[in-house]
Each structure stands twice: as structure tokens, then as C-alpha cells.
Length: 88
Image (cartoon, rainbow, N blue to C red; front, side, top):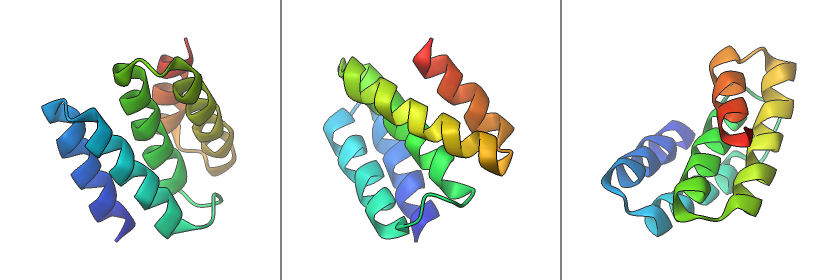
């Protein structure tokens, strides 16, 4: 279910429907519950990209930092790279 939400959020993100993408990514994180698995940084990174494109730099940074912290713990190099991209 989590990956389905993430995929749907990415479709909205690519279509430029940012408020829908943000809502879906946030719902994915609610469904997931725990931050300590490999899916969390991926969804958080995608959410931070949506915030960034929407011009919400504060939430983009906070969410990217969360993704970064968990990506380091889980060894998710792709999310680690992407979260750094959003932060810098």
C-alpha cells in the first residue's frame, strides 16, 4: 500500500499537481507509521521535492532532513543522494 501511495504521488508530482502530490505523500507516511524502514526515506524525499516545487522551502528542508537521517541508518544511497539534493 505504501509503495502504491508513493507511485501515485509521483504521478501527481510529474504532472505538476503539487497539492495532490503533497497530500498523497503525507498519507503514505501516515499509513507507514514507523520511520525505521527502507521506504520512509524514499517517500520523505519525494514529499520534500513536492514541497520544494511548491515553494515551501521550510517544509522541504525539514522533510529532506528526516529522509537523510533515516537513509543513513538504512543505507539507502539513492534517498541519501536525493535528500542532499533538496537540502543544498
